[in-house]
Amino acid sequence: MPIPLEIIYRHIHLSSKDRKILFGDLPWIKQSSTKHRGQFFSGEYVLVGGKQGKELLTPVLGPERQKTQVELTATDAMALGMKAPSRLSGDVGRAGVVELEGAAGSIKKIACAILPIRHLHLNEKQAKQFGFHHADVISLVTASSPSRVIPHVVVRVHPSFHPVLHLTMDEAILHGVQTGDTFQPF
Image (cartoon, rainbow, N blue to C red; front, top):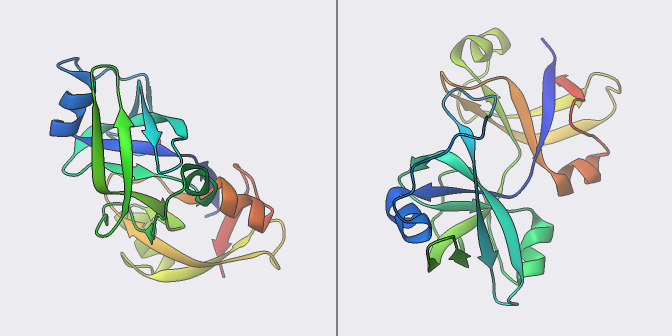
């Protein structure tokens, strides 16, 4: 089974408390779904600011999460003048500090911004087919050029996941790949 690449861009997941500060009591609007069951783009945007005062318009992904998390590329973090660690989604310990501004308010968030580690989403059935387990670290090769290896890919397994390899734009440029390219285990 070939695994498609989807380049991920900066986005933010909001906690209920932070969403209320940034957007008031406005209900979630589901603008479009992602490939992962239950996740969606809300059509809302947050301005993300850093030490250099630059502001990056950042789309909000739903549904709400326990903790607010901004996922940036290394280029975004540099533009903001901040250090954001490479982490798996959900791991915001010692993450970067950002200023967030929404339609109804603003907030300074400590331990919020990360650079997402390259990762492969699979559901349980697909993981079993490949012999992978949650948190395995693997390498993938492009189907069109087996000499093009993407190393150190973390496997994420969840029932709602659609099979997809996620790289940031910076990583895609580094490896010379684009959305729609397909991969297979090395």
